[in-house]
Length: 627
Image: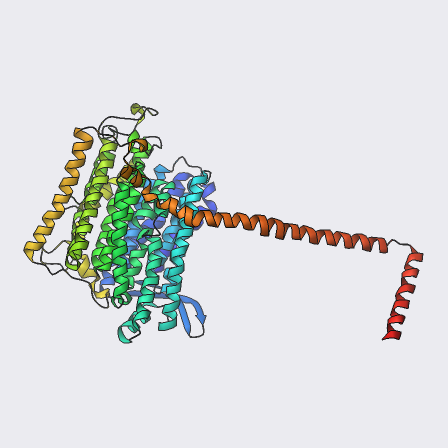
């Protein structure tokens, strides 16, 4: 089976659960779905040593051949795709296990696991494909699965709207990606990674070619990875079940844009304008999402805007050319953000579907396991020293300082905002007094083991994840670090940090100070003073703007959604009802009239037939004579 074992097991799980799941016990369905992701994870781990010797390539068949363009269905397992495959299948296994308990009472249990398996299959196609065409195939596949899973509870019209919004906004980005691939074919004659990147290194093209391709590919990444202006779909995507938020919208699908840019490093190295665009859009996204997160009261919405902000931080690293730093944060973010989303799901499960943090409080006593694991996730994302998020964020901040002190200052400010909104959410949820009058505290309960075991595993990974790429001030031997592991893949090299040791320690002190300020400020406000999140009516004007997300959704509705909706309604009234419907009705009426005339002529009266024959003969003779 080789590499194909990585993608065929999830596809097999999708087929079995999709076709037979309604007739199987839920436990069997869950075990099949989980095993379909666990087996590829074990296979990927077993291939670690082989990948160190060189990339593994496996060709199946010719996917498309048009003229000189030859595209094959071919898998590539190199160091980059192996890291992504391990994240997808490893985190995916834990989320499948968690879902067996979280979705146990849902009538669509088997469909949910079938969709999850199909998503993992498409995500693996995206990262394991050996050419841009297979990446695009997986890219569109995960978009479809995202639509299905966001709108999984389709009985709620708002959830269906959120699914359509995600689908449409991603199609906007996908158009940019598709146009970029057309330019790649036009100028390089192939979509195969090896051919394109070797051509980039050897043959010189005009600067506009590299810039145009890089910008168009980034537009695709903007859609998938929720960057300004294509980010508003991600918070609304929280309408889906919480395991969907953890798997698709925190750990895997939204990182596809980061993977695309890292994979295309050879193109971006020759397109400095595109890299600057990535840097500043990532910075703006990180700041804007962090500000919005300050005033959100839905526990999943806070985490959603946190995801957008952290993705912006990864794109800042990409804009600085620090590809390994972006990948390092991608991996650690997958650990602690999956932990936080699953932890929020545990809270929602224990609170009987309550998601408003203003209606929570004091849950640490009723949910101790969820409390401690959620605390670890909050500390990790906020930059607590020596946890995974601390090391990955610190590496990105070092690169930004070297690139531009102004960008560094703004990135540090964004990191500080992260600590503020995360600890605000944490203290309001788990500390203070219980504030829900609709659901008694006595009924709040800890989640079952199938949900808490994945939380514990992810908590351990959130603590130890920094070991993947320890900074040189802790060890001078980086032979086992992620940066060293990925270095052979980069055609033009990865950005490295060159700062004095004293400067590095000073920057480290700044990062720790920012964390401490955020922690103690929020602790004083929400524990010592016992503050509670404001109601919208009580907010100052600035807080109301943040609570309404800078009114970007309203702006998009006014500029795009409503005009298009009115255009659709006009086309329905004028073209559809009056044009097609009335036109079709008129055509039917004419046909009926002709049928009635024909029926009168064919009455069966022989005398009438003779008269018609005589008249027709006379008409023909007359025409002949005058002609």
